[in-house]
Image 1 (cartoon, rainbow, N blue to C red):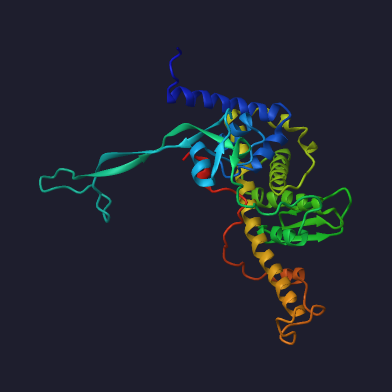
Image 2: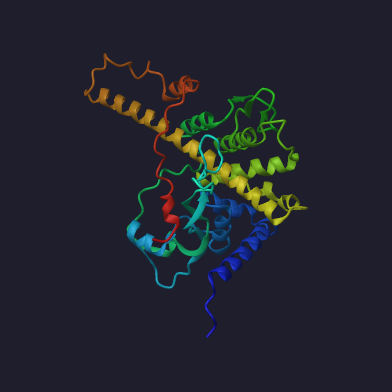
Length: 358
């Protein structure tokens, strides 16, 4: 009977799997597939995103065996093969440390001139392999209804674009321009220009692409990246953000991704994937927050109008429907007003603690 693997051996095996996963993402023509998986796990570490993708690329929501039972009232189906990821398991340790005077920042001495020490508890970071399962590997109570996915020609397009504009670090302007250009970020003027007349999907994707340039490549003083690297970063973030919202985009722009890896180490490539993932998560979080707030405005307007038509409200108190500004006009007029306080995020993602087994 073979000896059971130690925790150290399992971590070494996982590290090798991560490195192999990085190589495959950039060399196997599956970069777009990785971004789709990543878009569902933007809050996870780049190592865990690579591990999930390499073992179960179609995964959408993962949790530990016990977590599925206790938190979501679901059970893992018999024979399901788990997904191995890495979970932080720091431990506490007590140490003796010199006692420092808060004013002089020097060690405090006792009456004999010896340094006084005090016991202090520290946390030492450690990691261990854990097993999680995707929702498709479980049965039981349905999860809470997730927020509406934006598909096709982008549902609630006007609200969604307004949320994008509010999330953008610079103003976004839609105007006529050459047909061979979707848009651009103007570094000197600090604004984004998008071509008028594009489809809704194309406009959203172009907006997120230029949004990323404004977020990541908005300084002459920063370390200079090649134009190709900047384009890959912007296109990757746009693809991942759109995938998160269910907006299908063209993956053909990643045909030259293999050239991106030339001369780069595994760590360099992982750092690139990490930057893309973190940026996508920040953009998604901001858009989610503004979209939720703006949808509340629309729902309130709809309810008020319905009450007037039903005779529940005095129409004299309100503008008539014809004279009342549309919700989009209200949103545009409020675009430059102080941003509203943060509100709870939409229930699109499962709780963060679902990552680890219960």
